[in-house]
Image (cartoon, rainbow, N blue to C red; front, side, top):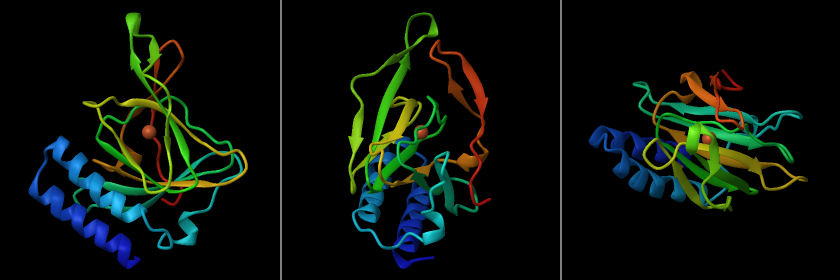
Length: 182
Ligand code: FE
């Protein structure tokens, strides 16, 4: 493991050893993730490979007690996620390229409604999702002619968490993401 990623993992481990408070983890973990993604050059090439058809997520580190996982999220040109939730806190840091994230909430009769305009993440920027902050979103590569890569941190072994993707009517369908390199 590259020293920069090792340093981040050690600091995240110390943080979750200290507290289980979600707001504090998002605030202090977000600052740690910002320090990680403000400099490129440490992500292994095998965890930066796009797939021609779908976005990919590679597991970079899983806490032995599954209190957090660290992933690289690799977007091929123009690729996007369905509308989905997480059920645990998540931190999203941009490493290369850019991504657009549209937040949703469930409005009248459970229908999904956009929560404001999409947010554009540029390299070095960090944002968060969680059941407290708003947990439903749709994300896409901001570019249709290049790869973008985000570094995501979640408060669980996210590839094994039972989550949901949503139809436009707000109907939840079971979803488990797995990992491209598992
Ligand atoms: Fe997400």
